[in-house]
Length: 338
Image (tube, rainbow, N blue to C red):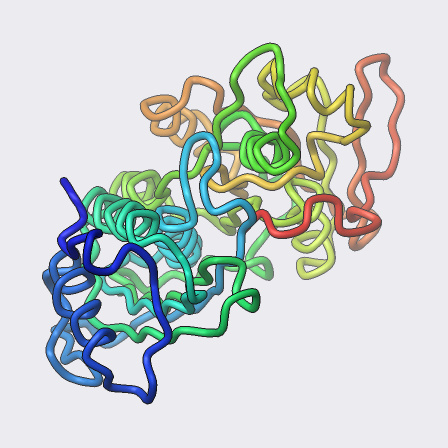
């Protein structure tokens, strides 16, 4: 599908004087509304939500570069917000989107991002219903920033949260780790790896809904984004006041990702993901959850257990049988990965 705004007329985003200039109105009408067919012609959207309980989340995306192997800022924004809703046990329904555009951004680039957002929303059966657009001066916006707000519905009365984690829970990882951070790093720095590393950027709501529809209530779910699996485990150990013990040999890592991390001196457990989550599950339900996750990714695995020992501690059993403390990442390893 070609960009609906003729590039010969407006090849780049230009400054619009005031909030309702002709160029901005044409951009909204011919590009955004052409892609986001559910957008309502008002300053807000009227939503049909019959349930009493809703979940709302908001997130901003400033990834650099805008395009990376396996995705771009557009599907990253949609999937990232959908996944935050899914981790609460909610079924995503609606998104709002705000664009901060830098003057001079290629209209073709913008259209590729918008098209990726529409595709990602369609895959997850989510409607983009309202939004906003602003243009900033050249050199002040990195091309494009996106903010999204998501609304989902809770079709159950269960609480899925860190304080619900229990001693003896098993820790399950939904797939192999480290792909997104390494894909963005390689693209940004112009690095060439022996094998192509693509971001795992994907919606996770179907995984969670399948688990819930099977009658299984996870105690806690968390997508392992900034800070990776190590950050997630430490946050949950602290919130639950329990100890988490994991096994390094059980953690799935693609060989290309592992090799890239070794060359660059990174720990895969500290690398961001955008289509991977950690689940805390009662032990009697572990096999059922793995069966569900394996429909999506055969790499899903049990990586550890929860213990009622030292509150807030996360330990890692090494391949040679030793055990060390797994800390939070010490600093900002990969800035602007989302």
